Length: 119
Image (cartoon, rainbow, N blue to C red; front, top):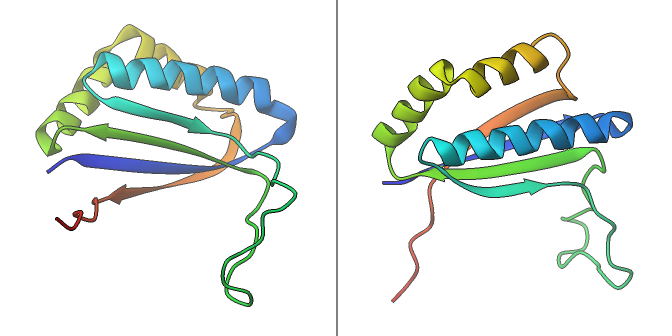
């Protein structure tokens, strides 16, 4: 079963260039160590004609959220990535660079399971 992770960051708009540097580094590290990175998604402008489909239930989200989404083939591949990136000189440097002053306010992560498609 694939391991897909979504990381949702609350970003500081004044530090966008630093967040973009962070995103590029981690995209490369994940792909280097066997993952498929689906990208980082930054806040964007809502299209003028966009409205929520279920009035009273839906709303526009916060404008300071960025999302990363990546997948590993299975739990063993994800565990191997975690082990390898901790030893990778670029992973060590990235953690040192951002540990005490990350370019985001907070983050949360979720592990996702795909809903099987109907035949």
